Image 1: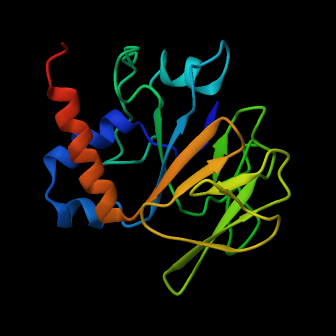
Image 2: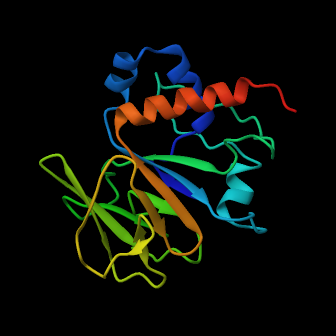
Length: 193
């Protein structure tokens, strides 16, 4: 299951195609993770059930409209991707931390057995982002290097971040998110070969 401010990527790609960069950044001012599962989906995992068969919705985003309930085709390039803005949720009691983990009280919830309940957390101090592993079972990785538990590692626009062996993400600035979404939109428009 997906919780928190995990947004329907197809709706966000469409929005980026409709807005210029300035208007998009006004609506989406936060850094974000583009997350994907490594390898093939297994039966019952988050990407198999939620991303391939059901489109996630988030009421209140983008003018209060919920995303469509149209199933995502398996060959869709968006089917294995999740957009998760790095913003605080009201469910998370840890001030100053944007948490990533398996349980629904995290700011970014990734429901996989290889993701710990509280796997890692991000902090932003004066525009400088860091990530810390929260003594997770399978580790947190930045650009392929394992993060020592409870050690702040500086991350920046484009950093590759892994949550255990199954989940990888890329940290993107708001401008990079916009460019990435426009690129995805062009890939979607290409006819299948």
